[in-house]
Image (cartoon, rainbow, N blue to C red; front, top):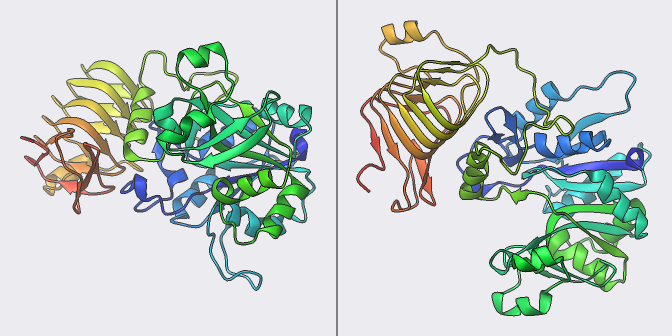
Length: 425
């Protein structure tokens, strides 16, 4: 069945909730885990499930995403697989850019007429999870569904942020509500296992992962041209029209990277002793661009829950619950706690820069940084203190932003020696 599937991965919109990480890149291009990008997650899930025909639908700030895909995903001449870009464009049929998830697929489908396929799988490009899509396809086939939606049990406090499904005894979706108010939730409980009941996870939330029969999808998009989103429009319409819609309940780890806080927490959780997202899996590897980098060097650093990518040179005195990206440089006696440092795109001649009294990329000596995200190619001088805290109000300037108490240092900025950010608050 996998060879009859075309996968469309949505590149996302403006990504305002992940700003400033999305100031110069789309959400799926945001670096994760020190060496990957978010787009690598859905692509890897597809490849590990035997699905190798993928289009990434892009529109906003897509240059770095396009470059990453071009340099990463190559298939040999004897394979029918590909990962290709489908960018939003104005045509005689439509002068509009993508108006939403369903509209992006609507504008893309005519470009797929030269391909043979029976099913369309729609994925988001900004989620962190590991799913065997073969089970997803099996659910669709076994229940003779026209549409299958991946769902995950959630507690009441989380349910108000998702589309919530009501299923019958055969796990077929009968009703759907988008982001229900808390007082409406008792009407939207679904039958779940005793384990989930004990955890208070009575509500089935849509994961934004869809599988459609090709003709059903095409007919829905043509019949309702004013519906631009799947969750808000197409799915409720399809329920009202009596389509067979199955729920595929997922019981693994899944998180939607929607905000700076969720991104920060999901990233640092990768440094836990046994993280819920497993980067060390022989059967389900996460693929990304191959870099010919040297091993990382660490000099006398006390490391506690540290995930460190290749090509780094680290002299820090302490790294605690950190994720350190490729080519990172950290100076002597520096302390990093609860920090994601994304690293560098290239190496510099540090001796020459210091002769010119310039700040090289990386983190200098005697720095203390906590509760922060350091974007790519940042130059931090010596004796710099950066302290994120819940006491800090949200704010923004040319050097950094504060969101939910997390300080996000912008890509490529220079922070002079002796600077204090968030100190004393």
